[in-house]
Amino acid sequence: MKFYSFIFVYGLVAAAANVFGGLIIVQRDWRRDYLKYFVALGAGYMLAVATLEMIPESMSRLRMAPVLILAGYLLVHFFEHTLTPHFHFGEETHPHEVRSHTVGYSSLLGLIIHTFFDGVSIASGFLISHPLGLLIFIAVLLHKLPEGFTVASVMMAAGRSRRMALWAAVSLGVSTMLGILSMSLNKSLVHFGLPLTAGVALYVAASDLMPEVNKEPGFKVAAVVFAGVVFFSLTKLLLQGSI
Ligand SMILES: [Zn+2]
Ligand SMILES: [Zn+2]
Image (cartoon, rainbow, N blue to C red; front, top):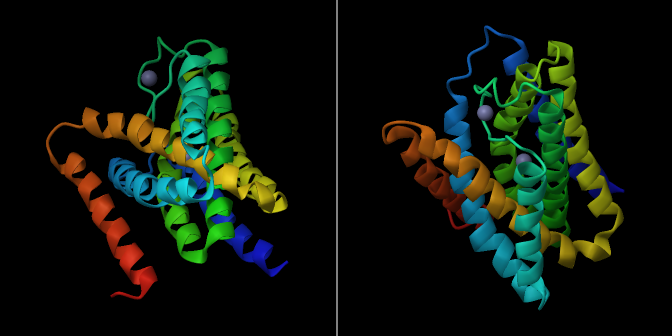
């Protein structure tokens, strides 16, 4: 029982960040220019966690891990960019692309699937070790604000009300919690959960967040990706007790 309570606290923090991200778009006068730095920091941090922690740990536990990593990657690609005709992270600034309500709802569905696996990845990490859980939690947390912001922005561009946009952000938080709950109730599936979510993390870092970093002019935002990798290394060393 103790395990569930602390893991749910991490989940609630991540879910709250989704809701806060939605609030930023609903409250029109709130600042949002700093969000691009979260996207870049999250991209670097998550890429490092996926390649240096989640993939090697998955491979040491399961021979078929590479197949699940690929499956996780393709799963997000299917729901976010195949079923959904127009989707990208950040503010929705292409009203002609999202005029129909279905685009808003298909983006929401894509992100609900994605955030479910955010939750599965946090729980998988903690089921294996506390340091791994913390590293995955930080990686997920860093992109939670932009995630909530994105879904609320898409819903409003698709003609939905502010209240509906905020509910969309709340649903991402709920989906994250459901992911945590599902993995926590099926601990024996962690050998499958970790590689699957390693593929999801790769997609989020390299195919969702990185393109948004590359859209920004100049080198400042691009350089923050490296800061994300350095931040990961520091937290890793801290958790090992090396610094
Ligand atoms: Zn767009
Ligand atoms: Zn996510």
